[in-house]
Length: 376
Ligand SMILES: O=C(O)CCC(=O)C(=O)O
Ligand SMILES: [Fe+2]
Image (cartoon, rainbow, N blue to C red; front, side):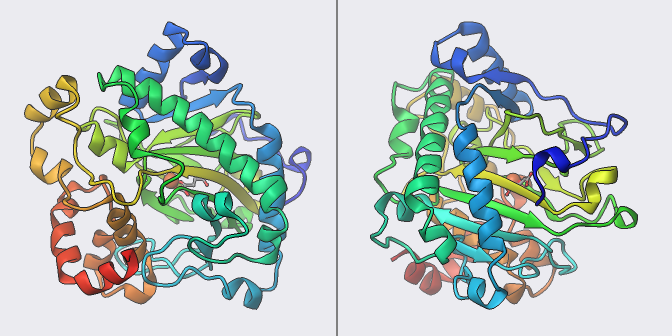
């Protein structure tokens, strides 16, 4: 990917969806207006910009690590491919995930570095990584992982208080020292060319994020959200120095739907940007592996009351699985090698299709053998 200065600017004349801008320094200082803004963003759209997060250097270095890794020969990257069992750590080749019910495949490469492997390095917790990752573990990846964990933990504590949970409740479900699906990901999509922009050709299909909080860094456009009560996808404009943060499925479930895990996707960057390779960077904070996904009704009257009056609450908020099983299922059924038809694609969905949650128990029960062997 060329230097940011060489990329054409995001065009002025495409429709975008505005996000609230939350100032991380004000959040840290406990500013009430800023806390209210974060709450509004987290409950209404589930997406917001985060400025003054202080991670710019770590982010730049991670983009370099991503570019170095993507430039490795394919057969070298394939030695670290994540495989078909649902584990998301490692390299994901282009063309291995279904992007729709027809079984069309994606064109997107990922390098996913587990928080557990980064923090334990050089000890291996889950798996090994390409040499471009290893050489940057100490100087680049660990600092980015630590910064991202700290920022997301601060945001979680604010949401914790607004949800009426006893202090530290969400923190106890997201302990750094316990194993989880927390992961740093660099995503690369090839240039699309000006003539090939197809509104319906997703580079990353419509999805909700699998975990609790995502800390995303975009330089080119391409990310789109489907805002509540609208039927048109809208671009989210990348703003220099601003992260894009969003709520994922597990926080949606823990909060009984109060926090919104909104559907989003990535399509070709708009206009002139389309002919450039697109790289993005995300840190996903996810609950510890053994945590059961369910609303925290015992800990918060607000959550209890909300769930009590929510339609289809059982089906929506009690998938009957742990955080780890939730991730395994979603990843596994995205893989084209596990694709048997539209049902497989539906089985990869999260809270965007709550009817799929009722199938989770069956799926997990039907495959207890494989799920247990993975989770062991
Ligand atoms: O690349 C982006 O802008 C978004 C990536 C994303 O939504 C994801 O990896 O879950
Ligand atoms: Fe996402």
